[in-house]
Length: 306
Image 1 (cartoon, rainbow, N blue to C red):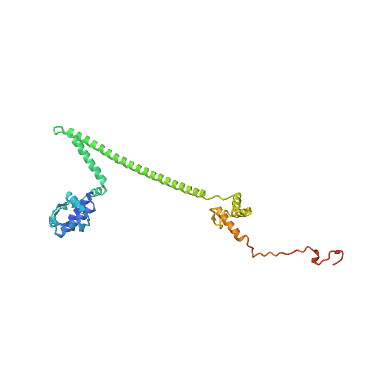
Image 2: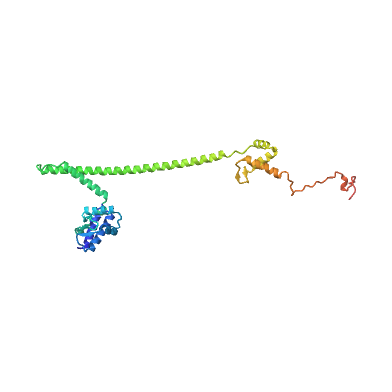
């Protein structure tokens, strides 16, 4: 048993088999490790727990699915034993014949092939088979007629392949159009949301502006001061002061309620209006209107020299 050729054949087969995933390869490498430990004897006894531990498979359902796929594709022959005290029997299939040299053209074709290409090939094969089954003739007919039927069948198959390709192109174009329309709808929704936010912000600002009480007129201030038994002069002082500074309290914040400011003004006038100002001292001087206090003569001759 040449294990290098076996592994080479395994990877050659796996590279073409697109239905297998990394979990299948991990499980097969765990099986190969146990097979190597048993000196490449066939069949060997295996343990599910040990294989799951080596291949890093955590689910028993995944383990059984991968083992079934490997058995169906003739990588191994698995014979489970339902006895917990007895291991299952497994036989590793020979894969040395996959190590034959492959031309470069085929390697390039294998590399460029994808799952979609395989699906298209399978569909084409099924179509040709169905067409052949429909147009089969008996062996009594002349071979020339059979050749004509075969050419017609091939032409029909080619036409159906072209139709399938056109359908794929059409579906792809429809998918792109749907994506573009979805993007347009999303952009329109975003625009509408932005407009709604702007409208809500403007409405909130207008509500705030409406909620603020308007500044009073001079007549309203005078009426309010008269109701509180204050003279109109104080109302004029109050109005002129706040009108000059833009109705700001303390020169910074806007006034919310002018009536409250007016009441505060009245309180301040009661506190500081009657107190004399100590910094300014008024001295009453009696002015003597008698001209004799200047010590000058009333009758003076301006013709005399000084």
